[in-house]
Amino acid sequence: MGEGWLLTAEMIELVDIGYENIVCTQPFGCLTNHICGKGMIRQIRNIRSGSNIVAIDYDPGVAKVDQENRIKLMLSIARENL
Image (cartoon, rainbow, N blue to C red; front, side, top):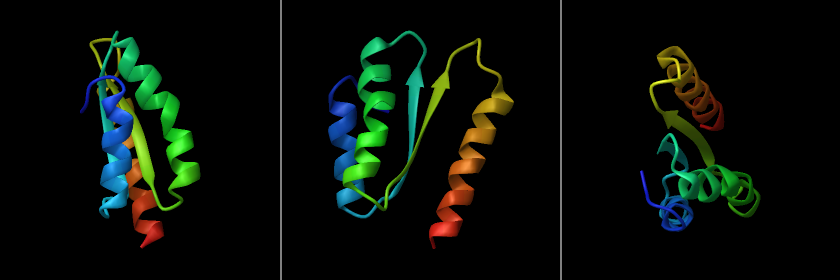
């Protein structure tokens, strides 16, 4: 969890020090997190090829099963990459 533009820097730092699997949790309605978090994930994957990042929205309108499925998908990709 991060705030605004620092979120992208934190994800890059985590990948650089060896944490390739990242769950980026975001509260609903936080525009800067959506732009800097979700918007930069593809670019981070392009420049850091080993990264496995998923963005999860946490708000009352999102079904819990959707959140869990996205995390499970990220974990299955992490297992494949081992």
